[in-house]
Length: 370
Image 1 (cartoon, helix red, strand yellow):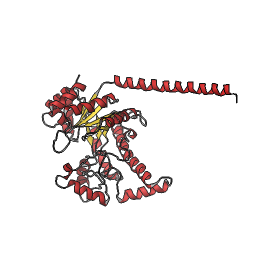
Image 2 (spheres, rainbow, N blue to C red):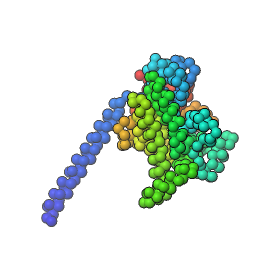
Image 3 (cartoon, rainbow, N blue to C red):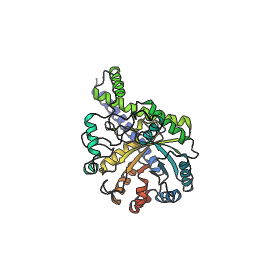
Image 4 (cartoon, one colour):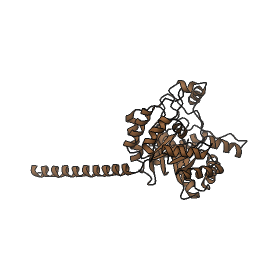
């Protein structure tokens, strides 16, 4: 082949590559600019039940646009919706496979044990140690965030996701909340594995063995990640679909907690409207991690479902001696980093702790109050 032709082909390929890079850069810049034009929205986990009108006024002053309560009482929800509306705050309520299922199961099946997830022997021993005395505050415990200790587990049990009777109880809860006039939407909290990986109950063991036989190309660890991740994702998506079947206009939201350790940011696999994933945990994360997670949360949100908006979650508890102290400078760094890296909708837990600390409330107010 003549050298002139080779050089020509090489030049053409280089020009084409440059054009592709320019096009991609333009798309990214356009997308980023468009995202920055979207209004900032603040969502809080937690609603104070006493003097709702005063609480909603305080929340509105800080800049909250929506609040998520854990109450399933229709009367309280109607009152919260009415109080929120007076201050332009939308109300969600959430369900959980933890306390909510415990109460419902005990009422529905008083003679049957609750189908909690099963831990390994080592994990159960770790759970007992963590729960003893004040150990939980004396060790580098992560409270359901990304674990840093061997066999670290959540101390709160969650129902097994292979149990259909428990899922049916959650569907009944959805029936109740979907009928509340004016309620903006349904939230999910606590949907994850107590050991952050899987369940060891007999049914899950059997189903996993069947899965491995059907997927012989996967190693056991890879198979475990895929099987138990997809079980969790399918469970949440089923409940979100069920909610929409009861009320087509209902909005769905979640905070991914406890973490799924093999894939912490799996949330874009969920068919929900607002997918909250941790960008800044209660423990002190480095700014580089906050920036990286914020970008992934927002940029990858619609990889699987067009309805989804990525939401960054920031954790804040004002409980010195139990949780790391976050001063105003720390919270400002976390919020600014999340916003600068694409998060336009942000969740915080706890609403009440933010409102009750004027210095911290001031940080949120500067970003979110109109």
